[in-house]
Length: 231
Image 1 (cartoon, rainbow, N blue to C red):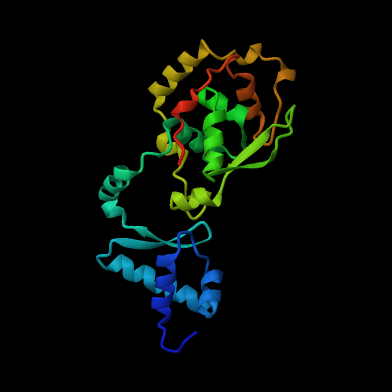
Image 2: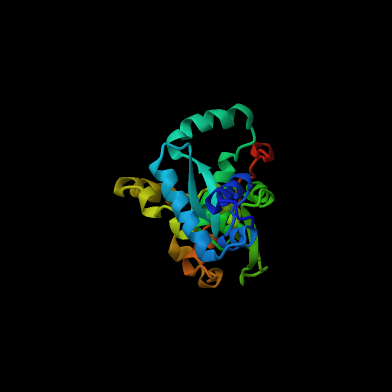
């Protein structure tokens, strides 16, 4: 590295130029510095951005570091993005992505059981966008594919790991809503006593997953393909 180059400025320039996260090891190699030195520079930059009135912040996500626009300006950034980006994720894709994120690894049949519709188109779109990937096969009959989120998912949503996902309890319905949901489902799903023991297959997700598969409506509605918008 040239003696006149400031390590802080060099790391900052690389982060600015990159369209993906950069790990500490990558930055150390590019800057010809030790990872300890790079880690200190990153910590200094992170503190500097937080203390100043900057329009961007430095975050550690998906095993690396990347610059993001400041959350305070999210509404204005959204206006800009929506002015030219008409290829956002559809509601179907967002629902499917949420199920995969919180229940991974999960099969397509399990996703369908939660949503109540065929999610093949949404799942294919998420796979093409690199947000979801195949994660082996389930042990259930037919050995269906299992799906999980990718590092791209963590990066796009600004998460260090899946542990940073908001707790599901924050979205849980109250007692009255639970009662109404239970009553509405009684007319759709078979009672537990009506399910033959042999029909329940316990997968890696436990007996609960098997029960949900057994309780899946016999003819899930096919989701129109044209609701998916491709990036």
